Structures are given as structure tokens and as C-alpha cells.
Image (cartoon, rainbow, N blue to C red; front, side):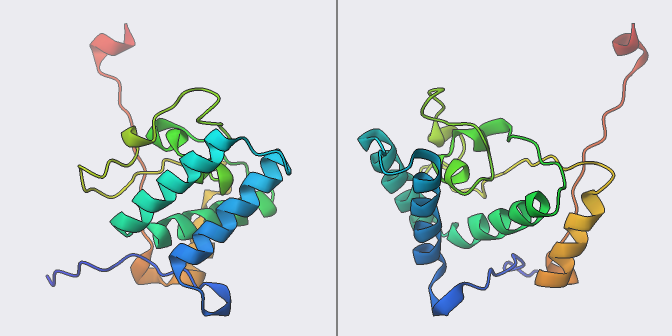
Length: 164
């Protein structure tokens, strides 16, 4: 088998913008959508910090792709969970409407999600309506190509001890 390190889909940014500039633009629009013109300084500073870490680690495109298919689901009436796991600690995820949990309000840590000292791909767990999940997968396959899309699911089992 060939080892191919670059299988992530590429988000097509408008107007030839690079992925970081477009991500930054969407996040600023998200802050305005959530808070209007009265954005507290703590949100602005946290957003700048998170964006710099995301850019430094090369994950801008990843956030755009996730935002894209979550946005597709929401616009098409497919139920999407509010966000869970460490991704809920990201203000960028909140601004992009990937999650609906305000990480600052609930004192959630971004570093549990992405840590510059531990280089690993961020894991954004997203729950889609089970009877319509395939629509999101088909959207991704059609937009990004079959070789760049793989649905991942976890099945749990219960042993006799757990059942009792």
C-alpha cells in the first residue's frame, strides 16, 4: 500500500483567499452574528489566540471543511448535535457554528482540544441525525471526492457484567 500523508480534502475558498484568511473572516462574521457590535475584549483576544495556533499548526483548511458540511446539514434540516468532547472548548468552532456551546461562558479550555506542544490532528466529534447521516456523507463525497471521505462510527457493546 502506498503511504499518502495528504488525504485531507481542500476547501475551495472564494476570491482566491488562502484558507487562514477565509477562516479568520468567517470567525469575525460569527462573532458579530453571535454578539452583534458589542463583542467583549475577552472574546476578541481568545479568537486571535486560537486562530494563531490553528494557523501555526496548519489546521485552517480542516476547520473550513468541517464548517462546510455542518453548515450543509443545518441548512438542509438535518439535526446536528451541539458539539461534544474537547472541540466544545474552541471559540473558533463556536464562531463557525460547528458547536453551539460558548467556551468562554463555561470556562472551557482550548488547549484540551488543540495543544501547540502536542502536534496531533484535532478531533471534532459531530453527531448527525441518524436517518439522514448519509446525506451529509454524500454531500462530502460529491464536493471533495470519494478518496477524501470516510465515515467513521463507533459501536458500543455491552458485556454480561455491564448489562447487570
